[in-house]
View 1: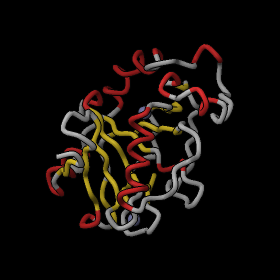
View 2: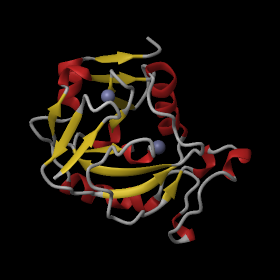
View 3: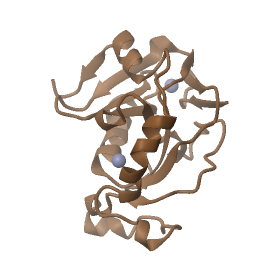
Length: 194
Ligand SMILES: [Zn+2]
Ligand SMILES: [Zn+2]
């Protein structure tokens, strides 16, 4: 079992199994901008001071064990391909959906906040890659923590090993009765730039 809980503990999502499907370090500007937006506009936790987020893929199949009424669903622009699911009380990002996930998987980055323990079980899968390093501007690049994996698994844009893993992620992922799209239906998606 895996539970993800926001900083104020008014929302929690639960997976039957602690089944991490993939893990990498994402340096893309979308991920950081999302977390920064939630911090600045919704009072969310302070993001790390470097543009790298440990990212874990989970099946799109969970239950809302706490605070359905406090879950917000947001897109940062009309064209945004990712959808942030967060706690409206404390601004913590719980999970993120993306068009390419095909409704089968979601990601979480809640384990990046040292201020609180967002994940009931720490990720066990080793980090498989680091990607979108080219999104990090030159002066911030020095602040990135060292990558512990193979140097060939550092990518300027999308990780090739992730692309190669997607067919398996779709297969091992699932779409539960409760899932990211269902949450968006129930709670409605608000668009920041609309
Ligand atoms: Zn909260
Ligand atoms: Zn990213």
